[in-house]
Image (cartoon, rainbow over all chains, first blue to last red; front, side, top):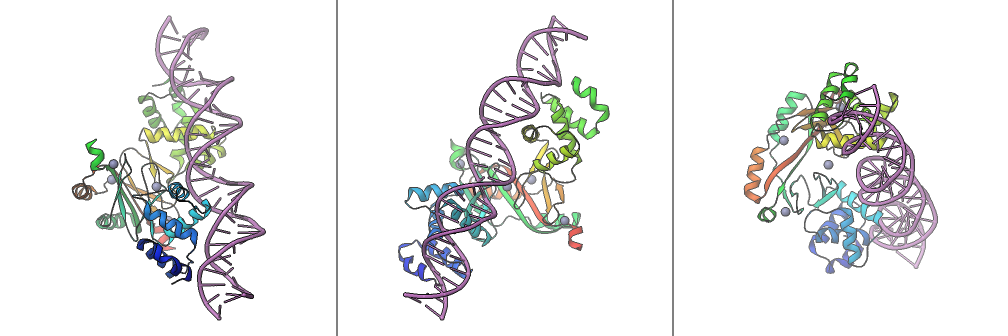
Length: 152
Length: 152
DNA sequence: AGTCTAGTGATACCCTGTGTCAAATACAAG
DNA sequence: CTTGTATTTGACACAGGGTATCACTAGACT
Ligand SMILES: [Zn+2]
Ligand SMILES: [Zn+2]
Ligand SMILES: [Zn+2]
Ligand SMILES: [Zn+2]
């Protein structure tokens, strides 16, 4: 546990300290800008982009430089703590959550539901056989209208 | 059939005239820049981006302005004659082909195989039931190594 | 506390893509 | 074939998202 984190963790949401601990575990320092981005990310309701993170941080008083926000988002993606979400148009949104994950996105309001079991294994096997590829990863995103937007 | 196209079709590959006819059918004019982009696109081996189209056209002597290339690519996408390909990093590549389609991409050499039957219907039904969303479209892309890159 | 190294921030820059608008031109009508 | 007109083009300015640079800051460890 880093000294910096220990000094601040009592005033932080558990989700944030959890993520911070994973940074430490991966050998990265826990700094004020990184904690700020983690706070902003956990405060978002669904998927978010870098601009929204910065807006939130500016509104809450102390935003790091935009470069550090980009760097932190990239770092979290590399550590697999943040998943990139591909939309129909905007491909640079992110959602918190570790590991393999996919999303159902509302094309009207942006609400997002994450799911893990995408069931493409049979498809992967079929295509490995027919194409000769060795398939190692995949992207599955679904688009539609959420219940609330369906009603309207 | 447009007059412009009729005057040039004998010197064009059939794939290009086919696409041009679909432009006409959709009410768009057949112009030199559009034909050039169609030629360049059919000449690419796999997926391509706008820069590669322009490079090809410059090499072959007469490239339209970059703005017209972007416009034509966008038009072809809107007409569903061109599919956008989402890669792990580069999300702005395109592959010729009409209708619903997905891709298997080699992460090393970029080779691409298209497939149509993605078999996500069960997944869609399951998620519609569990989330309440009405799902209307989806994105499925697979990544791995092609046979040639596997050997190396 | 002091050293060392990772991280930051300001800014300049790059890349992809779009808005503007005068000039060009495909197409249809005569 | 000529003419009219609405579409399309191209040059360029601009915007948005993201990266490179580099002097400076500040965690982490002793
Ligand atoms: Zn994408
Ligand atoms: Zn919605
Ligand atoms: Zn390959
Ligand atoms: Zn499909």
